[in-house]
Image (tube, rainbow, N blue to C red; front, side, top):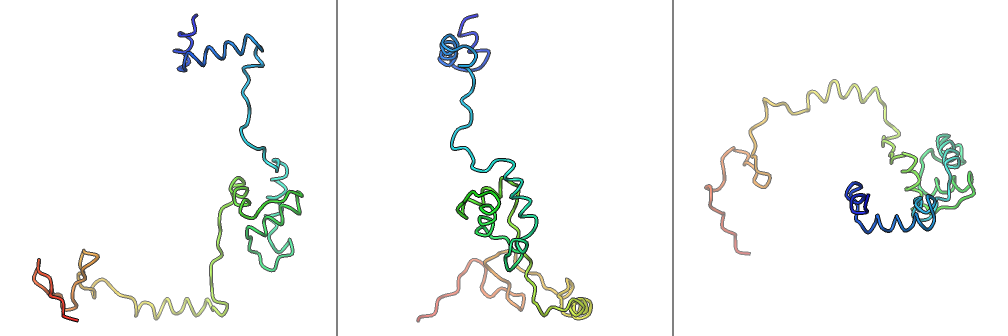
Length: 166
């Protein structure tokens, strides 16, 4: 089989097939092995990432933080404590993404919130206050032109109101 046939079958250029053949002649099968991973190798191995994930699941308070909220600087500190590898907090986000951790924000609620009072308000007061469909008037489909309260247009269609002198 000639190089052009091989290139056609593999859907690559003839130059590539020629280069591969020359490499194989010089170094055999070993010369055709891939170069491997491009770029710098990660500083944390799979076992260390598992240790970090286990530490993070314990919660921030278990690591002597005041609140149970994880921030990037806090995660960077835990990574350093657990593995001895130091990361900039801005890079920690990439590590968390590789671990399939996503951004979670705690819900904000007032400290004085009384859920029984909220439920009572929703059942009684909200029903009286909320707007209903039968009380509403038709609005304008235009986002830039609202309908006047009387339901009539203020200016004839196609005509602009004159500006007042300032």
